[in-house]
Amino acid sequence: MPAIDKVLIKVASRCNINCNYCYVYNLGDDGWRSMPKQISIDTMQTIVNSLSEFSKIQKKPFTIILHGGEPLLLGAPKLDLFLATLRTAFSHEYPIGIQTNGILIDNEILDICSKHHTTIAVSLDGPKDINDRFRVDNDGNGTYEKVISGIQKLSKHPDGKFLFSGVLAVIDPQSDPFIVYKFFKDLQVPSVDLIHPDGNHTKLPPGKSEYHSTEYGEWLSRFFDVYLSDPTPSEICLLDNMIKCLLREKMDRGGWIKEDYEILVIDTDGTFTKNDILKSTGNRSDRFKEGLSVKNSSIQDLISSNEFLDYHKEQLPSAPLCLSCPELAMCGGGIPAHRWKEQTGFNNESIYCQDQKLLCKKIRKSLDSFCINTPCTPNI
Image (cartoon, rainbow, N blue to C red; front, side, top):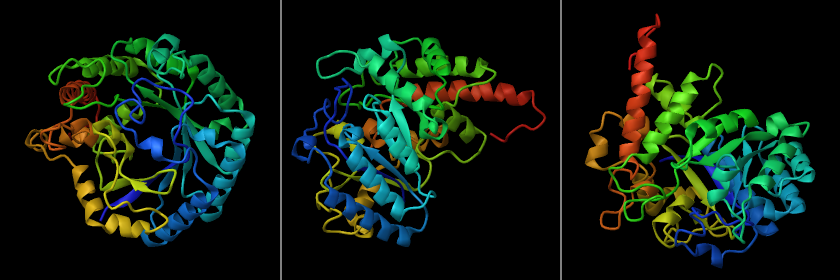
């Protein structure tokens, strides 16, 4: 049975901006329309009770992430209450974080997060022209200045070094990797988590012309060159994890699929769902048919159910091309949402397969070259 590694709690089902590539609102799913706009106080308490009960069974700590929509739409009073309730139940061994677009960050929010030992990650794709290509408000205007204002408040807070966990950046293959790297380095963000925009074999990601094309692999390879040439490189989660994998170190959770972990998602009404990125594969594709919720079932009941176990198996690569690929250990086969195809479901290689192969080859070649000149060469 898989262990729960992350618990993603949807505290708001609406957002104050409208990113073009958003899997929640702009890739065909309409499940958000039937959800409460905000999590209720009663549901908050029920979730905490359910997680607390589950923690006694699993024993191994998990990370709790407040998500949305935009989680800071919850407002300062309810955020304070929820974080206080969570921290009463869970020690600092259980990391708590918020993934936000950064626009609503203010000193009151930061003080609350500091009080309850809660980190904040901000979504930002790069400098203004790159960020504002996709990350726009509901009127189509760019969001860059407002996000940067939030990051500046976060960085200047007395507890900012702890609070600011990093930036989540969606790759735009039309951008200049050097400019993106330098921008985040100059901004002095703690880390950058580069992610691919969602898409699959049926609906291609933006900027990818076809399955065999390598726009994203080429972009990441150029980004890797800049990263490798920096004597004091920024923490780039994706690249760091892949290098660790080649060196036979344990990969950080949250990178490519490597270990038997699972994400638990809880919606604003308390319903358990699959990984919410699956919304990009079809309307309400993130829903369990059984409709289990914190209000009618335990977490143990959920993860012991046949439907959950079948869903967990779908997370693992199964396409023959993946299973026979020498780079499988490094790329993990990609996430299920990127493997989707209407005719064959998830039993395919990732739509980013060729990009991943190109990047793996680039990193492997660079690392092999480095190891030749070191006295202790890893057995890769």
